[in-house]
Image (cartoon, rainbow, N blue to C red; front, side, top):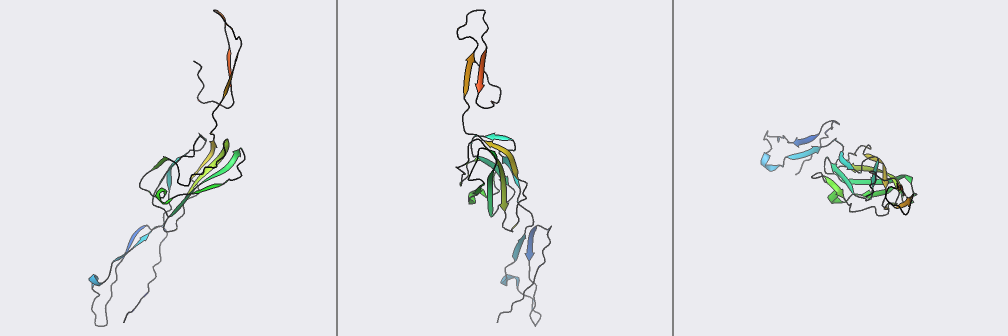
Length: 193
């Protein structure tokens, strides 16, 4: 027949690593269980939440694309990047919760300036967003809620300029003042050549 014994392990919250389970058992005749007849079992103990680094866009950014950068400290089961409107033009679809695809949940490389598989294509021009990163690992540990970039202005409209001149016809030894009026703040300072 088959005999089953259950043993409950109490896990310690601050311990991480592999826990090797090796049974030691004797039958009624004092024969030790043959190690060749069982598999050594390894239980991975994970009490560490996933960590995001290399986040981009950064806080106080101006961006003209939906590209994202980040790196994970470990492979995760699920992840999201959320764009939430905090100012600027109205965005009736906010928040934009983007579920990361399987290929975007790995810790083997930095995701640098990528277009997400589930790209949030309906962000609104001239809207200010908070971008937050979140993940859940295979042990159920959630990332902390401090992976946030805010404010981030999403601006995909090219600037325009109107020129005015103090004189439209000028000759030698005359000073002509040219004024450039832009429809938005220009950075760095514009050059007139």
